Image (cartoon, rainbow, N blue to C red; front, side):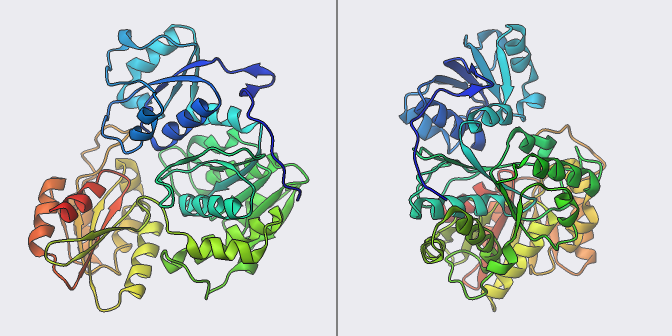
Length: 443
């Protein structure tokens, strides 16, 4: 494929420009903060509202002069021509969104807005139940090495740059495409990487078949000169490819069990998908393999945090689905043989924990000790019928020592007093459990 660049343009959708002055509600979110920086880069005047002023993502925005308010009074919402919002605010601060809508201004969700941005690029979208973030970050590194100068948004902070956003001048836009609420249907990818498909987000989808229907619809949007990079023989993936108009590429053919990586060896399968996409993009395999060998990961994806004062090694990982937990722990066990593996896990969502209770109870078999934080509610109301204490009991029934603690502070104190030089401490989950890892290292 021919590599070329194009000038930055105003964002359009069907010929209609997005307004210049945009206020972002929940601007500290990992996705919206990146979109905000992209909009600044493209000449929009951006401001934001955030309820968590300590978000790691806010420093970059403040450095670019973006004003950020912590005022959650709906009537104090700044005036703007357009409002963008995070899904999380649909439940925790709905009154702020209602005020934006009452004013009659264009109001879009993160993915609706991102879909408009993407229309001016050739989109390389990374979708799947697990491994999206690592695969997206790998794809960015390889595209950079191949001279494509992509724009990109990833759902974490790249270790290479400390950023979740890349401002490029080329025609490609690399984006992590989330299946939740069918958000990824806002994109029309030129290249779609499907890492895998699994039963997740069952607070929205009815079952795996419902999830597959969303992926199938996305595949149907890809033009005839486009590509799907996936494992076409996988039982969960195969049905979504039926009727595809584009070229299907099997990433398994690019898998190299000896590919040197600085990250966990389980990510060789993600690297295989990126190598396949690189071939489509005309990037030499030698260039792509070197970029992957140099890849150092992303924030909260088996991120090395340091050691405790007693010598325990501390890592942090975002994994919050049973498949992710099981796969990561088995890989850690393989790479750190002889170490005592302690996992501090933050269950994410009452609905996910309840629906996947059996799967979670079986996911921690590679751990030596499991400590559970209270369930992280995120966008949900509390459900007293499911608790971390119940999950701990189920884990114990499968032979792994497990206990629930009532706060992150108690977990940090417990680990500080018990973890030693023979231990690997791994904090896991989509909530605030990473703060335990940071506390242990800082002390």
